[in-house]
Length: 279
Image (tube, rainbow, N blue to C red; front, side, top):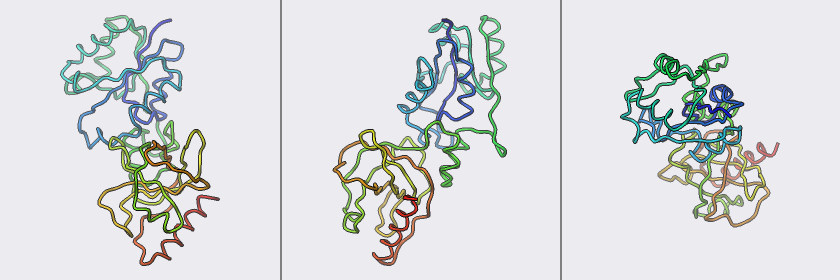
């Protein structure tokens, strides 16, 4: 079978990414993606999915192999050196990319350079135009912005997996349990974009089963903490999750975080949030 490489960051595996990857169907397909991205607006620590989830997503849509290239190690390659490196590893029949793909030291390589290279090497080139919504091009930066604005439902329309995070459950201060609503406490992985602070309708996966949940992302202004974290009440679940990796998927932004003046006001708000999630 002939081999095709698709180039791209593929963070979030949104519709634009999938349009590029579709060009490799029918080939032995290899997704060449990147890690340790340059610090462009914090992109290196504001990912839409972890590297592990990115690989799983790519394989799940039929890509045969995923190769992560470390830009710290290859960042000094010229555009030609980069392409020579790839073509020395794989006997390529096709290269697929988006029309804005840049590569090589200083991002000096572009589609025009790639077109000339492929012509000389006898490799077919497929260049995909950006996929657009009514208002803008679908891109990882666009989706990152939606998540930061709390527009999680809109972002999830375009992401391959709804935005989620997986991290160990930590010991908390037990306040949720004392209020009658036990919660799990987690840190959001530091490679991921931080969603807008607030209360979300969520889903929690435990041992292959999904539970409805209410998740508070932020600094908990009523009982202030000094960093952004996640505190999640899982509906219809009772069990010890301390130390276990738990996946939380954000589905809908419900409200902003509020500093309540009394415990009773907080309990009323939590009951309202649970009612909203249970609909």
